[in-house]
Length: 239
Image 1: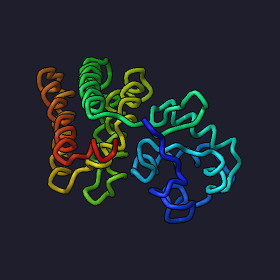
Image 2: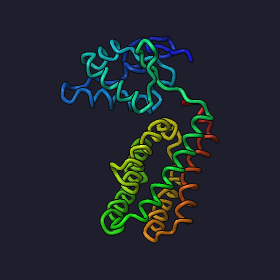
Image 3: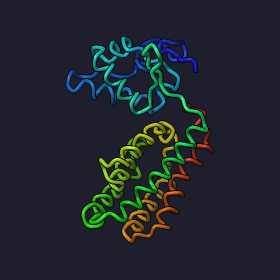
Image 4: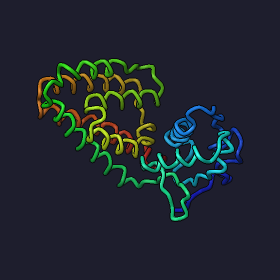
């Protein structure tokens, strides 16, 4: 894989119209977190393409910070598998093949099925945690932007699968790796209405402890996103 530096002509010179230059400078409070969010968002939205090599000095200058918070942010993104580091410690936006992306969708389906079945059998889940999951499901708004929708959807799934649990953390890692592809396939209005109905059906199945229905609903839910991506050609576009 050949890395394409940010100063590459395909991304433009380092100004507000370039991949990195379009990001605003950040304030000097919680710098590491803010740099992380800024760069992560640009990767997820496809503003910094897969295969791009990130120059730490260039990023620091663009964002108006020192190299220390930039380095911290890039290491966090590497831990989330959004970046790879080559032997010279240069960070490159991860590039996945279609086969790898589809494999990650299969893994996501397996893990989310396990987590939902575990929730259905967890003592006290219906009384203590299910109401919060329903509230998050109801918080998804049909008028949200694509990024807001994907974030809210992730929050719903975290609440259902046990926020902070080992399995939820692993699911997060898988979802982070395919996040920019999911962002490309953010559902249109008809699909969003279907997603809301699927969430309610899944919550009802978990409340009843209906294991067969849980498996079928998650297979369909994850499959819709995967199939939509393949149909759109989004895997090739983002990878």
